[in-house]
Image 1 (tube, rainbow, N blue to C red):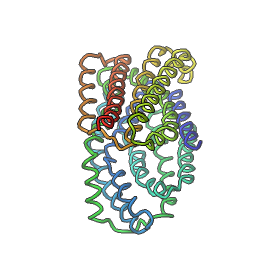
Image 2 (image 1 turned 120 degrees about the vertical axis):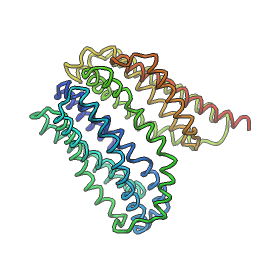
Image 3 (image 1 turned 45 degrees about the vertical axis):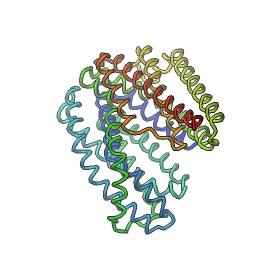
Image 4 (image 1 turned 90 degrees about the vertical axis):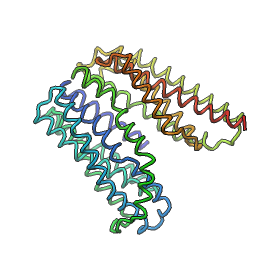
Length: 403
């Protein structure tokens, strides 16, 4: 329930920004947010997973857990610097390409930095209450962050409907949230410890395995927006940003799936007959969900677009196809969560190669200089991901039969 409230507040804030900012400003806001997401993935680079892995071994000891956290926080600084060096020039170019003035581009980049650094700190600090299952204070803090962002947006962009003002509001609320999060974490950890070279070495070992995949997904996850910003129009960038905001609603289904279905599948006995029936049933349910979601979007497209405002009211066809692509990507991710819960993991090189080849083929055969072309590319990528993950799950199950 608390997580649904967090998602709801985030959605309201997103809709508020869409309705108030002019499309030209919302396009710049979309570019800023897309680069923020990419830089956070890049800067994290597997550090949080490394810290979680090491922290899980010593979570009952405040001092030892403090060593792990301090080492991770120190390592984070270098990744933040590298991510900024890569991300800022690219973002600056994309902003200028989409009619931002030099002053506006600089202000957007400055406004992103608080949100960027706060997001990285959050990804590490949140590990402490997670390890101690101190979930309620964590949820209350997340609600506070999203509520604070909403109130800041109401008090700022109503008077100053500018991209960098909206981006700064998110950063300020996250910084305040991190201050409270640190107080929650300090109940269980001593952050006055010194960094440990031995722990640093272990975290870097984890990072080295995850970082290549993080780099790929940092850029591939935003590729359609960036392609539109280079080859398309500013209007198209604003439109895909606005439509993607509606697709965020699909994450509510992810929450339900990961709580109710994935853990049950993970606990099933290692029996071919049991697993093949349950796996097939889940795949069929997900396909029914896809059909229902796309059909509902088709039937109520005008009502959904009304939420986004008059600037996006004529995108009836585009929203149906975009939701199709988003739902395909969603169920691909859910199937991955399903089989990975049993310890079945595709080799990263195989997964990245499939996605990369799909992107190259898609960019070659599809005109990505317009909104519909970018959406078709998303559908192609989502379809291939769905087939890849579904077939890998069946491959692992049939290996049990052969064994």
